[in-house]
Length: 220
Image (cartoon, rainbow, N blue to C red):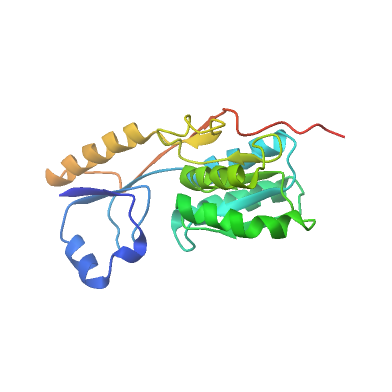
């Protein structure tokens, strides 16, 4: 009996999937292809949509999406929301850098791509990262590049991980109710063990946490 969180889909080959299907399992955050086990998750689309809408209300029209792992449901939903919010606002400027949810990868991507963006009309005013680790990786890169956040570049994350308020500047982000999610996952697991009726999917809403990494642009 177990709960599974923070995994990557490709880490489960067919033989492991067969074994997992014989166990009582509750997933947290991400689905596993080929399994219909109960899952506790957040509304990733609504959370990402509110993040992009917030950036738009702050005057940003050139918002770059720093993406997570392609093919994961989490990234797909957050990317879909990014595109939907821009389309609703009639904004055609869209730019994406593909990452993998990791801090160091985001750091390297910004270091590599920034000179190209800086010398073109593709320069964004804000970055929406698919998770806080990548947002922090971007912060690290901009510190090295001597680009001031939020004066010259605004950054928005997703997750509200424990040290997201300890960055410089503190990270504006979308919070997941991780404690409640874990509590619900254990509750479902205990019901599974006792062979009681359960919901196959429980979805929590997110919350926007406004800190200091996004600035309001002056309207012309």
